[in-house]
Length: 108
Image (cartoon, rainbow, N blue to C red):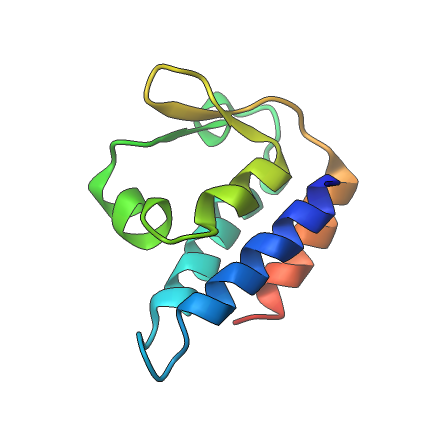
């Protein structure tokens, strides 16, 4: 699966499982949170603090980590589990970030 297909699949999974009727706001919060993480990378791709996400962070877990499809989207952007409790950006692909951010913004 290509990175963009992975992002699309994650979005579809979230939209299917977390409808506004069943769990209001969950999908939008997840998409918005991922948009902030990835948007920060686009603004300053060389900034180390934007290149990793603490998997143990309670807010991250609530908004993205525990949402089925959330990690898939981040992995599509190029974040990978580094085995130390963090997702680290393995490679910044400007085209993937541009397309992925647009897909996320279309959901909000």
